[in-house]
Image (tube, rainbow over all chains, first blue to last red; front, side, top):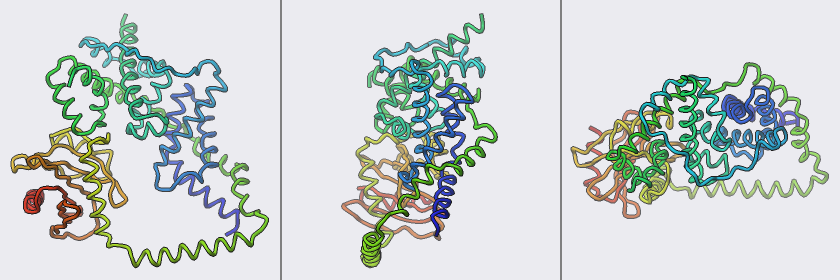
Length: 180
Length: 253
C-alpha cells in the first residue's frame, strides 16, 4: 500500500468513527461558545485536532466521549483566547443554591417557553452548564462525564445537582418576570 | 438515612446512578418525606421542560461537508503520518519487525493450543462480575424492586429489551438491575434475592439455538447457563445448586 493510500484509509476510518457524532459535538460547542458561528469554527477545529491525535484513540472505545473531550478542550482554548476575562477559573462554592420548594413555582416553570429555558441555561456558570448539557441533552452517564471533564464522579454529581437547582431558580425568576 | 444525606444523593438516585443498597435507602426516605417528594417533583418538571422545549442544537446543514473537505486538505496530519516512512535506516527496523512477527506468530500458535474453551472463559467472567456486584460500590446500578421500573431503566442503555420477571411470589424477589459487560458487549444483569443470598442473572441476545440448562460450579459459586428464544442466560449465586435450578425453572416458565 502506498503512503497515500494508508493515509486515506486512516482518514476514512476516522470519518466513519467520529463524524456520526457531529450533532453532539456541535450541540456542546454551541452551548459553550454561545453562538452559531463560533460553534462551527470550534467544531471544525476540533475535528482537525481529533484527526491529528487519532492514533491515540483505541478502536472499540467510546468514540463519542473521546470526541466530546476534544471539543470541550478546544472550546476552552477558544474561550480563553477570545473572551479573556470571561472565563475565570471556576470556584466550587460551598453554598448551595436554595431550592424553590413550592407548588405554584413548579407550575410556573412548566409554563416556561423555549426562549426562557435557553436563556436560563445560557446564564448558568459554564461548569454547571456543561454537565447539564452532557447529562440532559446527550444522556451521558456520570462516569462518561467524569472522563470528559477529568474530574471525580462525586464532582459530577454535585455540579449536576447544583446546576439543576440553579436552573430551576432562574427559570422560576424569569417566568415570574415574564408574567408581570 | 437522614434527610440531608438523602437530599445530597437525590439527583444521583433519580438519574439511576446509585448502587442498589444506597438507592433503596434513598427510596425509603423519599417515600416518607414531603420535602424530598417536592424536590423529586421539581426534578421531574425540569426534565419535562428540557425535553419539551427542544433545547438541543443540531449541526447546521453543510457543516459535515465543510469538515470533510478540511480533513482532506489538512497538511499537518498528513505530514505527521508520513514521518515513519522517511525513516533513514531500514535494516534495524526490518530485523526488529521479523522478530516481532515471530513472537506474535508463536503467541497465536500456543495461545490457540492453550486457550480454554469459550464457555469456560465466559463462566469465569460471570463469576468475576458476580463478585464485583456483591461489593456494591459501583455507581451504575438501577434502583428498584419493581420490574416496571427496572425494565424501562434499561431502554436506551442496551440494544435489546431484557425480559424482567419478578419472582417474589415464588420466593425469589427482584431487587434491581445493572448494566454489565460480558462476552465483549453490554449485557443486562438482574438481581434477585433468595433469603440472604444474591442471585445475578445475566442475559443478552445470541444467534445460538436453544439449549437446556447446564450447571457448573466455580470458586464455590453455582452457575446455570441456558439459551432460550434468542437470548443467552447465566444465573449465578452462592445458594445451593438445587435452589438455583429451581430459580431457573421459574425464570423459564
